[in-house]
Length: 185
View 1 (cartoon, helix red, strand yellow):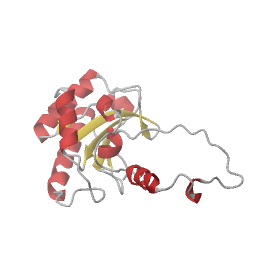
View 2 (view 1 turned 180 degrees about the vertical axis):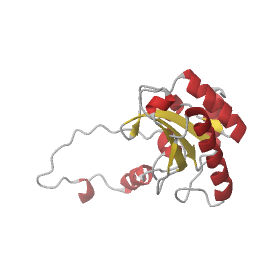
View 3 (view 1 turned 90 degrees about the vertical axis):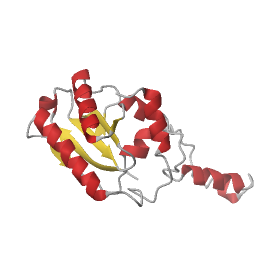
């Protein structure tokens, strides 16, 4: 596995404004071939129960999902391949979401490092993907909205509360690098 600072540098190098779920010059044929090889490697290692999942409006090409009993993990193992850069990441699932506490064991991560070397891709550790996103892309319009708010006079009716509005005490969840490379756009 590459050192974390090198992987962070690669994430930043590939972090450029994007038009949607893939860069304009994305090589779909090469991605299909690489993803097929990723699936083949998973089936060779974990058995035929490894299956693929694809999403719509996502920043990743697809996911290979391996049942927990075949992967030797607490939950199903999911390996995603990003559309932005040569990145692959793996985690266990808790329901439909990646676990924040449990990572696949060393044996699975060593296997993934070998697969990534063969596929000419980069394994991104989950702990890096959980770091707060501080890149250039305005993933959900937050930066644009904040810039818009800065242009308004503080006495603007936009800031006035409506009758019946109640103060909500919502905790804001920061965007993570996972949101940039391996999530819905």
